[in-house]
Length: 99
Image 1 (cartoon, rainbow, N blue to C red):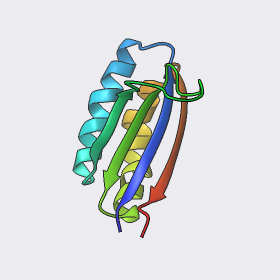
Image 2: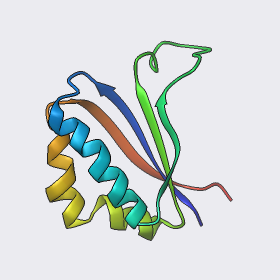
Image 3: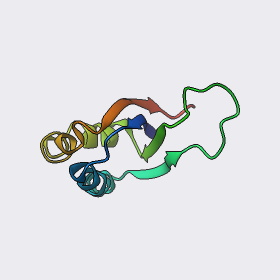
């Protein structure tokens, strides 16, 4: 069953290391079989204001095991994630596809 990694990000300081993070994490995501479904800010907000100014990232993986292989990998934790430190606020969770 497919699994999704959902990230709601408020980028407040897109410093040089953050720009490196974007590229490195994208490469790692692809190495683990992931692909982006959504990556960016809303085109239109129809209700509420929570999503205003947030970047939403939805990445799809063929299974929860593949998703966890990416997020929980030592390479991601040591080589990618530290690069985004100080760049904003991140809320990230995983979800399985509805049956």
